Image (cartoon, rainbow, N blue to C red; front, side):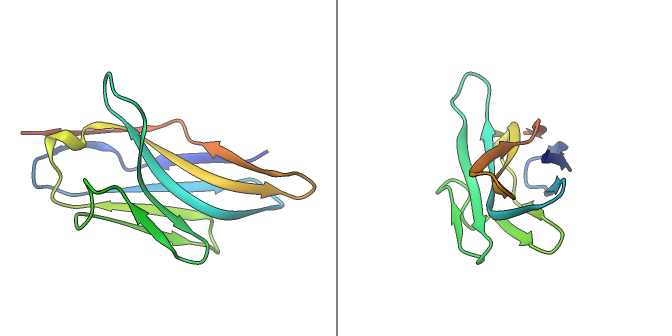
Length: 120
């Protein structure tokens, strides 16, 4: 069994910063990529940023230059540093990982979500 646990959400004023963390726990698994998605009220879930184990990154246009994703492969941790936050960044942020457990196919796992609220 593999679980993703997020932390670091909260309330911040516009222009402020937050750092989200997500840890994958379990045993006998490998991770090919991790990422962050977000879902604002009455909107579809969207990709914010992703990173592969080879450190290839991808960002939504709306966060380029403000957010930075990083990964600690040894600890199965992914971080999202969010700077210059805007009210439109307010959403529930989900951690996502492509994980292969020993003897199984690769599968996408999701965390429970952490709320980020940016006040104007």
